[in-house]
Image 1 (cartoon, helix red, strand yellow):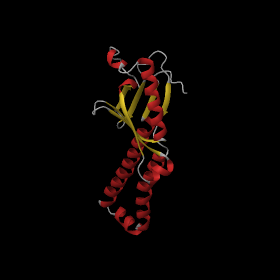
Image 2: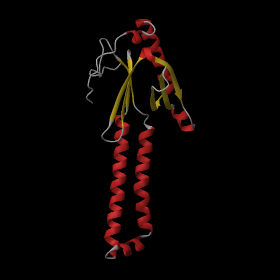
Image 3: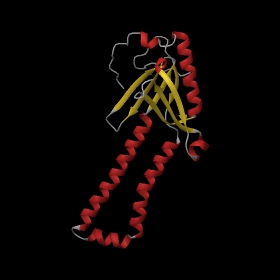
Image 4: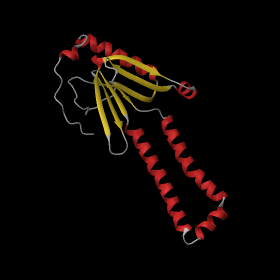
Length: 195
């Protein structure tokens, strides 16, 4: 059990049961793409060194080429930074009362949503492909009776085990509160979530 002291809208006796992030292979893929987008152009520059040096020595083409290369490398660095930030800040927390999804959308937008366990109708785990099967990672989709409301845990470790833990928590919640208990209760007051 983990102890997360500052859950948004935390209820009395609420405990975090799962704290999920994407599988480590997502970082490996990011690093691979980062090096591919940086090393491949550098290798091409070295392979055609004489031509590139000739272009750089020209009075108009040289500065334009230098600026374009700078824009390319800075752009690739920014994209890599945004993707790594997105990986690190995407988290899913499952407590004994609800599921909290915190997803980073670019650098300046973060979406935090919550779903009470009593509202969960279906939990699906999905692993597709050889790599996901071998490394045991995949997606978990938590859905309510409304088809529009679903939480998608992307590329998490052991999705089948996570699915079973969520279903176990749903059953425990229904045993504690009764089926449909959240529908009978008044919704909690809206609070601002500071992340």
